[in-house]
Length: 488
Figure 1 (cartoon, helix red, strand yellow):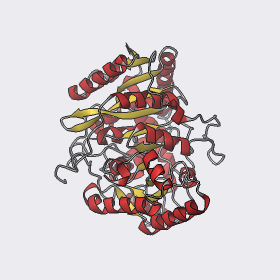
Figure 2: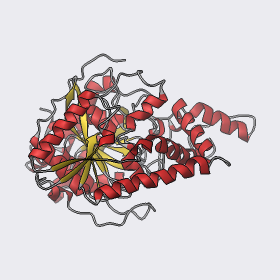
Figure 3: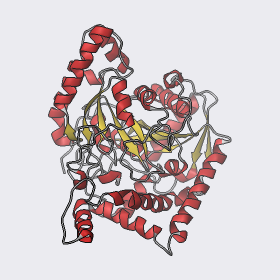
Figure 4: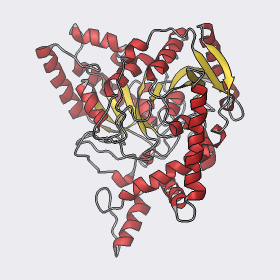
């Protein structure tokens, strides 16, 4: 069995006994990338030289000090909108194709402090705008379960690499479901923490009030380990929450007796595939057998969540992406004057989905339309947050499907933006309310993974991990994907 398929504790034990080295783990990752990434296309950059150098440094450190970090020697993939010093950070866009940051994002520094090893940068939808990873300007990513299907987006490269065994875990970012949705499509565990729990310093902004970094892992325990390493206040991020970080690993008790679960009828009704709904119901029955109480509830304003999101997110994106103008950094296309330079750079540098969202956002913020659209969307956002607040006065967690369907075919929906946007109907509400959510695999429908979504109270990640871990321990693990199907 691949070294990367073992548990974190097993890897640490073998490192301590000197049965394996950090270099062994990196070489295993690089070998797997060489074997399968021509089909999966999860990586935009593989830093073989840097990873092996770091592995040798860690092996030398361990031989001298004997102490190892929480994520000792684990190969990690970093989504390509998270800044990495000296490594290109393209955001999946031609506009930043040659951009090399001069600093590391805070989460990258924390990974280094925990002794993780960055293998490379992960493919993604351009500027994190997409639900299928077909909007990457370099190449679409293919789902390891069926290469003719999408892995989800925008963190599809991160999810696919974990599912394919190319890295031990990966970092993604979640604006409207971009960690949880690809986790559901690829049979991995995806955690979107509470807004502010993890620093966004060094994350290239899409929608600043929604973006949140989180891990994609093979199992819930690994998710707890990674969260322990990267959570915490950061003085460089004004939105970072100064809260006490608990011991997330101690939450993995397997006990859910007395847990109160609310299941919104809006997330189990129209638009949810029958196969997905059946597996979610089976999952709820499993939790009920473990001692949880399951009740149907309502999120009355959730029907407006997608429309609300696609006003707020593009509006913030139009503001954030104004900096990419060919003047300060990134690609530059010359014109006869400054206005032409702006026009040529942005026209040729941005892809069609990014342009679409910039135009939507600019319109929503324009004079005469701001109150009717952006302001109204923010008011509905408040109502959605209040719906959750009322439910959490009675229930510990909210559950439902992560996605309305399993992974769909490549090129099937790329020309239908409205259908594509509806893919996030189950995940967007948590982002609008700033709540933590986790997607954990709950079975296969027609051979493709389905994700169970668990949403919790603000900063209640311990509860999410406890419930997800208990469910995971009570059910059969998914088999390893065999990289089947045809390439589109």
